[in-house]
Image (cartoon, rainbow, N blue to C red; front, side):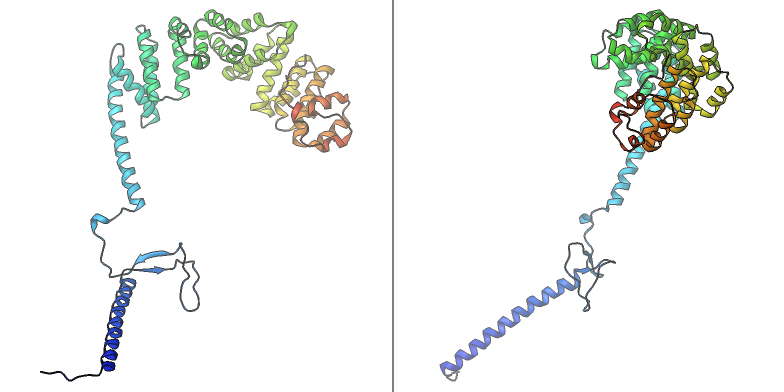
Length: 432
């Protein structure tokens, strides 16, 4: 069939409309697809505190929460990501189960070791140490380590077992308290091997081991402990002396007392060793025993130090009881030294009251020393009140200087807050 002839202009117009129509159809399809994605996949929903404009549109923000709309195809199970809480819960549950299983195994092995008769071997020692560290109950941990200490007291305990125990303790990561108990027991139950170990232990562990071991050694062999102590460098000896005295007191209070009297240089008197000994006796035996012991000491600076230290310890524990005891005493050197120790300890709590009690001391030199320490604390607590109190007490200006680090300039000296730190170090509670 022969098509009718069309003019060229008409053909051109039809082609142009065809192109426009086709383009419109394609654009419409794309818009339709975009609209479907927007409607059925995800939509941005403002959170509960977000503000919206009057037309209901929400401003773009990274803080907005995006959630899928209902009816969207669920994600494949393989693509699901566990929620953080669920993941942690499952991980925590597995860890808890593993920990319980490990603790049950440790407890079973430790129980077998505790019931074993005869010397403990490496396996039993390792099990007991593990139970002492990782046991689920405190009483089980204590019983396991008590079995270790019991073995150390047996007649069959030897060097090989000691090093097995130390190795197991290091591997298990025991705390400092258990190391202290072990080293004390080693010094008490196998002194020769413990002393020999001082030459074997690395330098950075030396002082820690010595400080733990020497009280145990002193509790059974005071002379051996004193000989070890005498060979120490002065700086190390000063740090270890308290532990030595602790062991000497465990052996016998009079042995410890004799040591202090024999090693004290009265021409270059240091009150600290007697102070340490007195506090150790008070800790072990209580105040009644401590005061009875101090009353029997010969007259002199060591006896005075004992009285001061005893009442300083008492004031720290029970200031009311300490001051009642002092008030019942007649005026005497013992009462003065008791006040000296009381105010040295109590000033940290109430410098004003400590000044009042220190002013009751009848011996001028002891009184001045006690007031100096009391004013040091009083000035830290209330500079202005301390200055006003200083005016009312008959003291030379150098006492204020020593107490606060400031030159005395009248009541206004109390306004110089913070200037006394440089000279506010610890001072001896002695003023014999």
